[in-house]
Length: 201
Image (cartoon, rainbow, N blue to C red; front, side):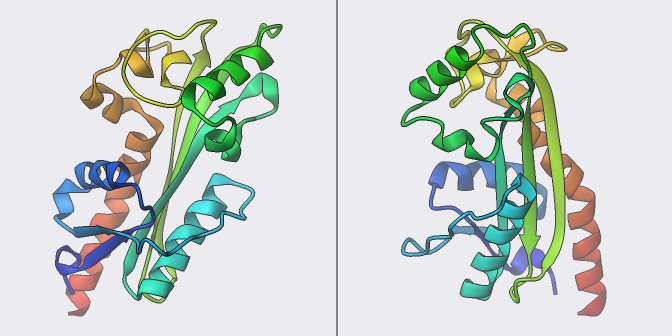
């Protein structure tokens, strides 16, 4: 079997995330599609890895197709890793989430943080074929800088490029972001998996 001929269900109903996945998975030419609109996966995991595996496995079993999922968020050292897996639910809007985070850190000298992403690929039977993690270390600024990106990007500063995620071009961000690193770490596993499947065909 050649995975490039298979439908790969992305465990999301967000078309923007599907487009982003297509960019990262371009070398494999898979047919990516969103999960069914009436499908809801409740994230009960306590870690990014648990949630990524749960989403990929559940969507694969329900659709009986290969499925890919990611789970990601921001961990702030001074807040004991918060907002962590609750990053997207830390406020109703991006500005609310940023305001809440900056308020929580207003008396903190330690502003180190990191973005974490875990990606999982599941077979149609729900078993996990491969997974990878990506981490981008940085720090939280006192005030937002930059107009691009989304979420916490305007306050997440990456020292080695001396810019926030919101100041980076999409291409530059894709290379150094937690998600970009996770996909880079996943790629050798995907190549090995494809070779293995072709050998069995």
